[in-house]
Image (cartoon, rainbow, N blue to C red; front, top):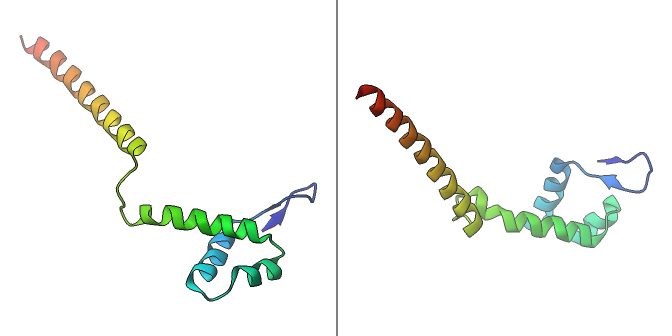
Length: 95
């Protein structure tokens, strides 16, 4: 955790955020306790917790979203297009 030069806004390391969120999710500590201890707003801790819980299924191979699947298919089409062009050039040289 560090403070910006202006002293107004603190920037928290990802490891710090994770440590607090794990304590909240596991029930080791309450959100209110951690908020008081670290002088962080409840709403910020709640946002970190919600972000963590939203992204957690991706860690275990959850199905990609529609947008992710579309990007994956576009990459595959691009790869196949390049392979086709290479094969066309190679066949022209053989003839």
